Amino acid sequence: MPSETSQVVEKSAWESIAEAHKRIAPRVHRTPVLRSTTLDAMCGAELFFKCENLQKTGSFKIRGATNAIFSLTDAEAARGFVTPSSGNHGAAVACAAAWRGVPAWIVMPKNAPAAKVSGVEAYGGKITFCEPRITARNETAARIQAETGAALIHPYDDDRIIAGQATAAKELLEEVEALDALLAPVSGGGLLSGSALSAKHMRPGIQVYGCEPAKADDAYQSLRTGTLHLPESSDTIADGLRASLAARTFAILQRHLSGIFLVSEEEIIGAMKLIWERLKVITEPSSAIALAPLLKPQVMESISSDVARTRRPRIGIILSGGNVDLRALPFK
Image (spheres, rainbow, N blue to C red):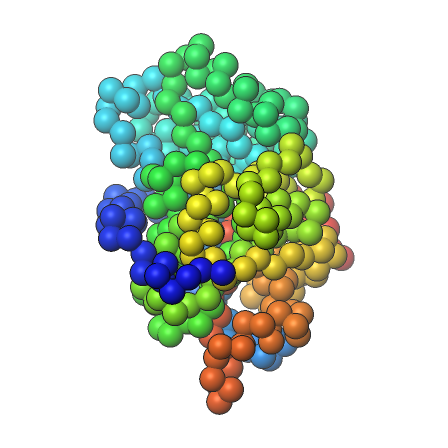
């Protein structure tokens, strides 16, 4: 839990977020915020869905990639970029690299979803497959960087990436006043740490929660024990949430996060189906996870504990992406 002294975000972090927003605004979408009276009634709250599944490249990742890539000088960017990615970040780097007119090498696990492989290829990314282990990704990316001289754009262990991802929550809080809580998925922590930085600056009393698969609970374990857990792999359906926190994102979450909710595979799939039925948009499992905890009465009780009983809590949910194979949806 964050201490009271950590409620106000450092000025330099907020300035970096504001600069990132200005830098990327001409190139990315200001995504819509959707509502559903049915989902409100089911959860006993007012829910506001920030739809990054409708973002360019199909996820929030284009925000961080664009900020990082356009922060560099022409000389720094001249030899292109390399990154390890399960898919969405790779597509974003490939897209932003194409905007700069330079190549992008994307290291992907060999079990990456076909839809995400196709997405990277569509933006011109040069894919190298590796074993589905974090060390294999990093080692392959390092080899390609040494061979090509490309600049490394890490998916989350980069202040420029975090500042870019933070702009999604910034837009949500600019549009929706008086949010009591904000939920976002957590994997490497770029989106969640950036969201926490924006939210705590704009509304210091807000509760910020991460949502994580129970089958890939390394962030939960890291925050519970105070020691960074670094598992090599996991087999959750939420393929975008198989990375682990970095020391950088871990430190931010330790200061600003209210907690992490763990979600089962069945609950992720159920939330994905509900979003389709009620919001009429497709999300990938890694995105739908941010709704899933709110369908549990005990979670809503936890979130509502600090909210006046005279009204329902107002909760923001970041739907992080929509890159899923429509031929293989996990629900019927």
